[in-house]
Length: 554
Image (cartoon, rainbow, N blue to C red):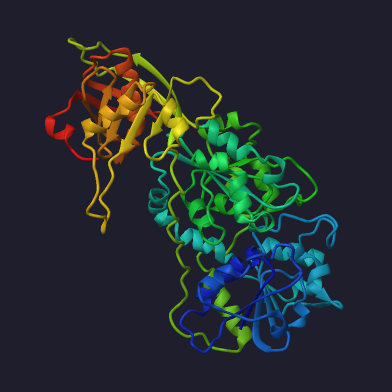
């Protein structure tokens, strides 16, 4: 069996079919790269890393295969010898590229690519929805005679992985934040082409402790730019915490984890809609979107994101009912896709399937962000909603609201905070709040080493950085020690926010910024107060630190 791919996108579609043949040792699986695409760079990387066998195109054209599976009708498929099964290249058939094939018709439904001398190119064309069969018959009655509806195997993986959402969010460090994913197709009408700075704008505008932003670029964009150049172009946003998932499986794991999706006219948002995610439209128009396609319906139903500043308000409203309807127009046979694919593909092979019914592979847990931001511009406001206690004690009604943004944020700033040992020297020198996290001893660490005590490090931090007003050490997610210049070392206890049977935790460095604000205005403040972080209240207590706590090593 030969899996023939023209690009990384096509290959990823083909890989989602593999569970159909799991456990069958009668089948030899081979992969080849069909020439002719501008986006074939690193197309076979995923199978090469997995140790799968690849076949050079020249040899593939000489061999005979019992079954050829492709996800694009384009390219020199006619040079291959064998029964051909054709899968959709993406979801919904929503794009038509000007100057290519029949105007206004997606390539997967276009007789210019599906017919050879008036006869269907594929022995079987596998579609995701009955409406696609209707559209195909309208474009080419001949091609429709070889088509059958089986559903979408990629959506099956997403749906099968929905139960792992909490694991994905934990791996991404999302917590109680809203994860907003920007998804971009490729080409001159894509989100990356039309609004290339949107990811950076959102990363700077949205408070770090309330939102997490991700960008999911089309694999063709990765191929065109290269992963390195793409990462460099997004460097300011990545330093602010932007997630940039890998192209094979991580984008799908992130989609499961996401709360909302901002999309152009690409098909990825249809998967988000099928998962019940909130969808915002950021398509600026053009000639590629096919009217009345599921993608066009989705964009018509979704609220439009005109500016980065409008996003928080758009996320507070209900999910538009037309979003789910658009997904229903793109995907059918949910839950039975692999069984239908197995039936059709084994029929083409002339074999009886073996083993249990196929199950979709769940998506892998995504890798953690490359690094968390190490320096922030902090906006903070102290307010009192209850009566403060006596002798300098903070009343339970005292609240300090904290918003953390990238250091290049243009809004009003109360202070700069930097993580010692991680942030650059410029940010460390300008920080009003300097903090460090307690290091864990590494296995195999050398015997010759030096360690600080908490008090010793705070002494050194305040001595060596005259502009620093407060220094602190994060000992755990619930405890930090902090000292304002000229004051005593205090313990800051941070409790999680309880909501709907869950305990939501926040970065204690944000609570440390709240303590800095409180101590700068009331140096003798002690007792309970509330740190409002990411719009959630977190109970805190400031108390005198004990001798054992101050002498702990960091």
